[in-house]
Length: 114
Length: 112
Image 1 (tube, chains in turn orange, green):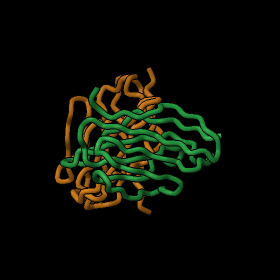
Image 2 (cartoon, rainbow over the protein chains, first blue to last red):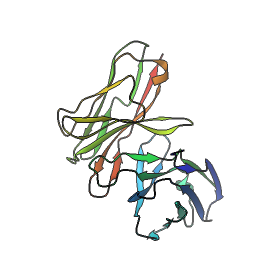
Image 3 (tube, one colour):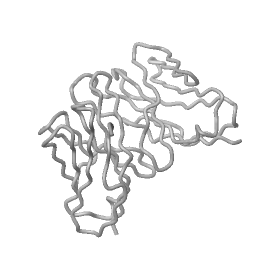
Image 4 (spheres, rainbow over the protein chains, first blue to last red):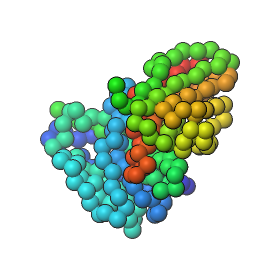
């Protein structure tokens, strides 16, 4: 299939690290994204990584990209209760073509246990 | 205020009625998108637009109509609403340099 795949649920203890995994399908995707959705809200861009990078770090967030395996991960260090949300992985299937729909995974629901 | 807004935030309608969901952005982004979010399906693209007067179908366009007469507005119309169109609808606009999409807060639509 053509889906972006994510596990649906992840539960971690407060203070631990969370790792959310994603596999994508299009090796020519230029950008890969992580979005966060809190209850009743829209999607908020967390970070993105350009496909020629292996890693990107932004404060508590670390994105790892394995192009060979088409695997993307988001690590959240020192996870807090405020990190509880749904996290979406997305790829840009038509990079720099002018029309740039993103293809989203179904989302991983992160629950943080105090 | 700058950003992307949607209206109404909540809407209840009946089967067969026409409904229009509004989307407005202040960034002058060329690209705009409509998605629906349903349990078990994630986000699915309905329609998108590269610029004023240019629109294209996404994954699930049937039963929907869009227009883009001005860059900042991208309304979505359900011509004859059906129960299967009960969903949360998100509008987004895109920064063309990085393909990054910025989302509105969503419209929760219930079709009875």
